[in-house]
Length: 234
Image 1 (cartoon, one colour):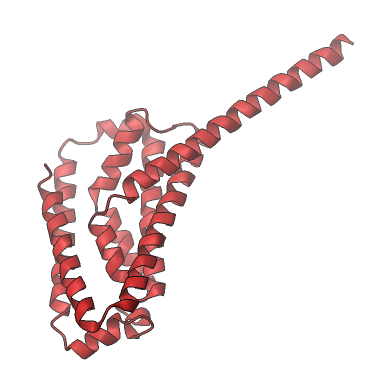
Image 2 (spheres, rainbow, N blue to C red):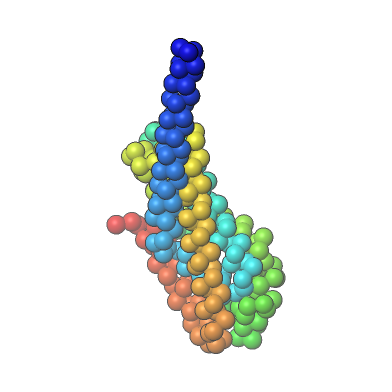
């Protein structure tokens, strides 16, 4: 009887520990969702470019949105894995990363603005949903994924965000909790980025060629603005 009672007690303790671990994992996942929304919702240069991509075609926009969410989750995983070791990185890396990101964003914006000088008929064909821009080399899904992966990866804001969150105690560092946290970041970021892509596709389908051209000018102008803010943060 004593053995049975002891075994029952051990089983109860194990069940309690499992329940506690499950609650901790769920809390970590919810924390990841909050962190993912925190980094994704504020509209920055990548968000503006994602809206622009949506006006070119659905397939490329969906692929670009997946790329942004993938990089967000990768930075969250890196910060979770390294933990406090983020603090030991060289102090000057942030300035160099911001300068490099500003150069890349400016180059993307200038290239986009120069592309608007092409004949208007070609622009309309490229930008219209289902047109050549949706499946061509400039707007193909694979090219869009690679382009937005690079754009998001060189943006230091995402890396700094997760580094500050984890080193400040706002993120889990254990194996199961860390994995749940990263999964939450991925789910939240993917949902938001796909929403931006869908908005871009919907708006692009309703704009005339002249209005679409004007929206591109405004969008690329915002990218230049964000590039300047990235290089010289307040």
